[in-house]
Amino acid sequence: MTIDPGFLDELDRFQATLDRESSALRQGEQESPRIGEGLTFSDYRRYSPGDDTRLIDWKLFARTEEYFIKQYEEERSLTVHVLLDASGSMDFPNGPTNKFEYGAKIGLGFAYLTAEENNDFVFGTFRERTDRLDAGRSNRGEILDLVDQVNGTTPAEEADIEEVLSAYAARIRTRSLVVVVTDGLYDPEAVESGVAALARTDSDVLVVHVVAPEERDPDVAGDALFVDPETEATRRSYFSGSLASTYQSRLDAHVDEVSDRVTGLGEEYVTVDTGEQYFDAFAGVWLG
Image 1 (tube, rainbow, N blue to C red):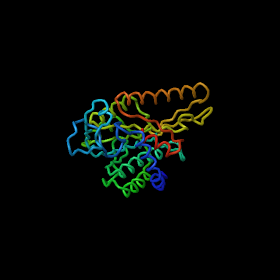
Image 2: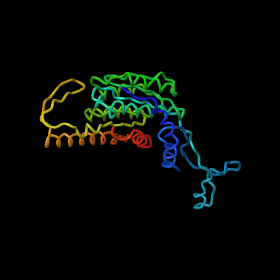
Image 3: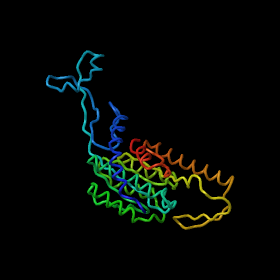
Image 4: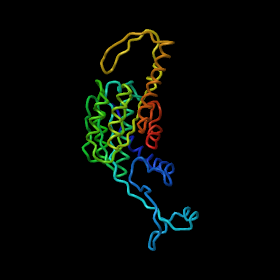
């Protein structure tokens, strides 16, 4: 892999903009930003002398002519878990739109801004099992180490997403957001089962489905040999016209089914196209 850690410096410049947009989208009594500590509205109580008058709900006073104070609960600190798919299918295609490299930058961006918000992160890759890469420091130096480790990782082999996510769920002990970065080339039922296991821990789950332009519209015509990057099985076929149309329809249907199964559990799902400018894609994922 060839991730340049300089993208973190660019992320610094984007952070102020992201924070402004995040605040603007979540003003008033809406949900707090996806990551970060804050205050969540809990209840009202009658005003008592000595209370902070800034907490009086003046709109409620206009309706009732009585003074009520808004009460808030402090949110618990959040641990963000980033699980990056390192199966063979992620190593596609060669070049700047490589799914693993692009997905890794999405995950590293989450880890970086999590650390900036003084929350903890855990970062790992998965195939048949999860391989934790961080050392538990949750700081900028840790991110730089992670860039080196990701650059030294070659996606290969198959992954069992249902087993991996179910086993990982058993380790979660704190309030968490689990960010699963994957190309989603699994049985949708297996994805659903794995996400459901995470959801049962009362964690929030975000599935980031990475798709490459070359995957959506293969630059292939005529007689071609297709190779499965995970099993190395091959298949020769004549790819054109109706077969190309059928392929695209099936891919779109698969993406839609994975999305439906994840959102059907009440969790979040977003598709990112590796042909999109990174920071545009990241902002969309971060802000939800």
